[in-house]
Image (cartoon, rainbow, N blue to C red; front, side):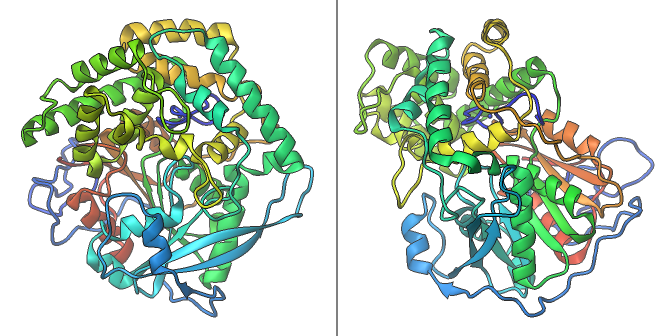
Length: 520
């Protein structure tokens, strides 16, 4: 949600379709019903939509690129979380120099932007990830193993660590005990003042350590970094794929540099609505739907949790509420940390078997495997900075509104009634930005005119960027075409059906009919 409901992901909620005519039955016609792909498999061809006033720009080879790429395959593989990527993929790393451009220091202070290249295609496709997720370089490494091989024959993926994340001058300003306090609040009860106190401590420490550059961490200025990347790649237009909250960076780029927009894929988008009750209620419902999909998948695989995943998770929260184990970093593994860990696992469908085993392990007294899902937020080191710190700064800087505690308390009680598991979690995150300086600059517009078609994919049970919010965001864009995958997890690119349509859009310039459905 842009400028109002602050936190967009299980962390910051936790800290926050495709292919008409790809197979028979998908051809756009006079019917007003959405086109439907018959199964979740790649298909051979897709008609080009004629409804867009502005055509997709042509693909052009780079001219005089200036990034000095160096082999970094071993280092990248050492940093990757599961799942592993095939040995046939090779990675090169480089860097781009940009400017922080803080409000009080316009055009000043150099910053390093880390980039990674995967694949040998001649055309660069820039890849961005959610601010609190895996860094853009590592996400690109994983994504290279998911996209159709034909895509990598035409494009090389260029992952970008957003400013303050990964290896792009990472931010580390929140004390470890404060991270634990922010993530530990019991979603079923407890005083919100505890969360607010932790948020105050985080804000104070970040103000001290970041100083005048504190408000330079936002999507608007990150869009400036993207243009530096585009220049150094040697291309006239930015071809880009962004997942989830990273769509805010791309829409800011379109607002700032509309004439430099190339072929764009947005895999989920933050909800632009200004009504926190609606947005957070739908988020909690999407998280519940993802949990139910996980349970059905678990039962189909014969895992020990059975089909009632919600009942199992509720019992686990009660168990650790009564006797929370202490993690190696000193944080108590209570119901807040446990539910945040479950949400992190639900977002990554490829890790669902691992999540099921981790939940079962926690039920028998060993919380370490489940805690590993939330460790990237809780823990930080020079080699592996916490994802929470830069996410807190960026999402708070991207927001203009702060809700008072009494309104958050009222909303929390309402959503707990609607969603006993997740309602109390999504609302407490509203307090994280309350002590943070409010944004005074205008937010970028979603409704930029004159853009080429933008492909927006949504996922029916997305626990990070719910389909309802992605749909609202796409409706505010003048050139968006949306494809809905009827699956679960964060992002639709793991679907072969979606992957093929993304390939057709990026490589062949084929624009799907708006509202096309890809079944799970």
